[in-house]
Image (cartoon, rainbow, N blue to C red; front, side):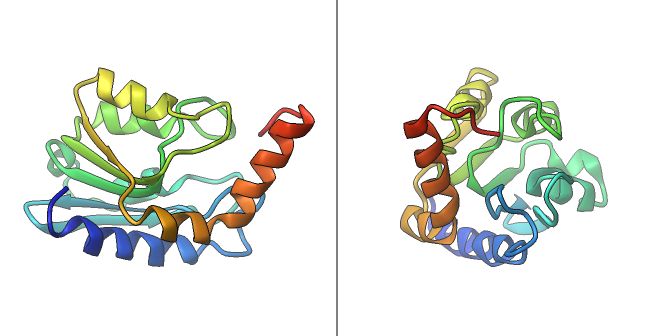
Length: 157
């Protein structure tokens, strides 16, 4: 962890908050891409069923080659499965980011560490737990919903 991780993650949480009321039952997620101490892309999950925060941040980067070797900050582990959108972990691997900083592991059994594992296997440094409590507070209802679904044996989305 470096001194600016917390600062960048605070911005991620601000972006995630912009999805409130628009992305349920999915979590609110924000993402920024940093290269040489400069934010080159920002995004958040804007509407249920549409692009996730990571894809929106990637698409905002003017020169896509700048993503190579960058650091990505995201409040929830990038997904690792195909759902309404392709896996965000694959997107970050494809763009050869150097490091991914995550607040919270996604408790959904379809993810649950899978995105982190996949990125680490691809050689990306992944740091987890930056502003973890703030991330849990932001998505409290999502975490409770997943726990309830797991407990009842229903399949998460």
